Amino acid sequence: MRTMSPRTRSSVLFLCASIATELALPVTLSAQDRQRATWDVTLGAGAAVRPTYEGSDRYIVSPVPFVNVIWNDTVALNVEGLSAYWRYGNLRVGGGLTYDTGRSQSTGTFQQGDYRLAGMGDIPAALALKAFADYRLGPVVLNAAVKKLTANGNDGVVLNFGMALPYKLTESTMVRASVSADWANQSYMQTHFGVTAVQAANSGYAQYNAGAGIQSVNFGLGLTQKLGEHWELIAQGRVMRLTGDTQNSPIVFSTTQAVVMGALAYHF
Image (cartoon, rainbow, N blue to C red; front, side, top):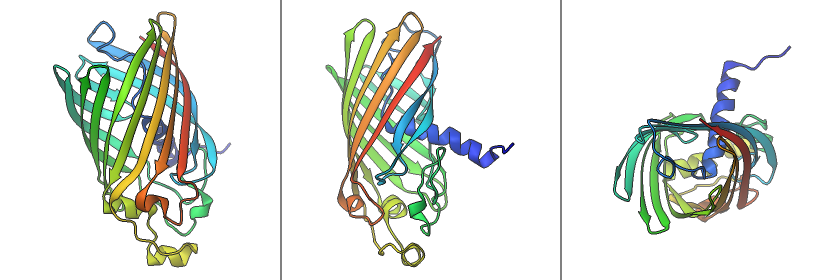
């Protein structure tokens, strides 16, 4: 029987985390909405339909874990990584670690990539440092986050800023709408959407230089339906419109990207 290599197993874990992260913040009831406890734990699993890579016009189904562990409303471990945060009234600020899965030259259920990228070379996976802040202004939550990738060959900076509107339809049903934009520096844009002279010779794509700027504009919608005291059904979707130098890249086959996820979770 063919077994999964350690590298593939780690790719499975971090790809699944990346998919869930792309769908924006979870719409489960947060620790501040529930009665606060020292530990707040929600675990689950589901599946997502996603592009084979950012800019692809082909889609694939991948498994997705759902993890949200909060200690003392201060330390959180979830699909976005590990973070610590502090609250000052309606303001929350924090920082921590997150992860970028990189990209492969081949197509697979457990990796970001596509065989049409043959000759482009792989983008290595990378740990990233992150800082974030959000502010509740009436019913609206304003948010901003920045991450700095740390791998050799994948060391760009991405800034996300936007707003979200969580709304409790009933005692058991929560919805969340969001709009945001991603800005990336030249290093990130060139790594993910540029084509160097060597890559052009190896892949057949035209040489292309991608500069810093707004990478995408994103629209999200999520729903959480409580199924009794502990179980929750979670559905999330995100539509992303590639903009600026990103949309003109020769490796971008579709400037409109969508990710849809469904999961069943248990709150302890």
